[in-house]
Image 1 (cartoon, rainbow, N blue to C red):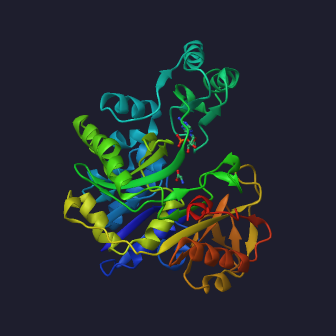
Image 2: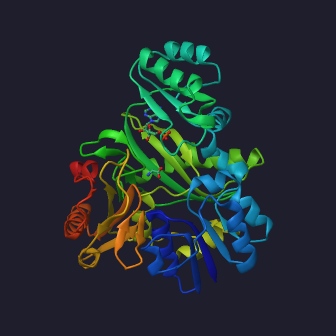
Image 3: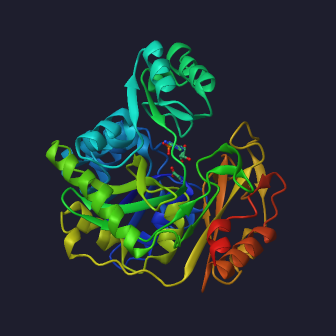
Length: 426
Ligand code: AMP
Ligand code: GLY
């Protein structure tokens, strides 16, 4: 089978790595990919957001399966266009990707189908938004409705901060068109966990649990990022809680989307808050794999990923059983100094080969590129996911940091405490 993966991050490297291992995969393309993906797939220099370019490539090469990694092309309708060509596509249509593309849509779906989430209001008018924030009282969260590259969520400790956030979003246009409407919602306390379910429009199949570290610095300090590290399994997600999340959040979402005429096919990534009494509440839905959560899931998945994704495309997920390694997996993100703010591009990374020989270690690339002379350059904010498996999380963590310490990249940094919540529990 000929497979095309769309995207160029460590998430897509992990997907390519798992797909390349399938005996049914004869050709693997990745657009645009990165220097690490180039070692296992044929790169196509087409940006993930270039819908026309990707459609033209697919028309010519007719892949048997297209796997779309990031949210932007999904929200822009890439899956619709490729489905229209008669291709199998793993990833939701634009009508279903609106679950991530509009936070207001997601909240209204929750209200209509009784899915537990924070109390909220949707506003275009700043005066009404501010009045609602005051009425909620205490800390509130202000969210730009549309896609804002993970930056559109502002946590406000009091009414004054909420007013400033609403002003910046609705009056000053801080998030452009993504912020022409806001969701103002109640602040939820608890522990966050990522929940992934594969969906085929009708049924949903839960994946193994994973937890992310969104803040940039150790101890969960500093600004939010796309994710600085992840591990799987996440001990907070017990079997009972997993069943409850399926029953109260995932299944009503899949049924609700089908009832709305927007069947969801692809991976549903629910960002959950587990409240102190154990109640799971939905913070947000994403319509793609998390990055870096995908990396740790792929390291633990023992079932052939190509078979699984094909089943999701063909409404056959109910025939699939996923098998997971009992090992723990961890991903430590190495980013360019300055991320998530401004950072330097083009610095050299060395000694990845030495890092890769650490027992259990696997390196996934994100923002990397080969210079004409063969040197490996960092060309993004998040640059590498240094991953490892081990018989438990402590062993996986020790191996991942041993690999990190072998890498020679003075302009890079990482958190040193990935896994702390889970390790603190045991
Ligand atoms: P989102 O992009 O909606 O996941 O929001 C980014 C981050 O903001 C989440 O991962 C949470 O840490 C935090 N957040 C979002 N909504 C809430 C909420 N209602 N209560 C507490 N924290 C929230
Ligand atoms: N790691 C969180 C995300 O991919 O949005």
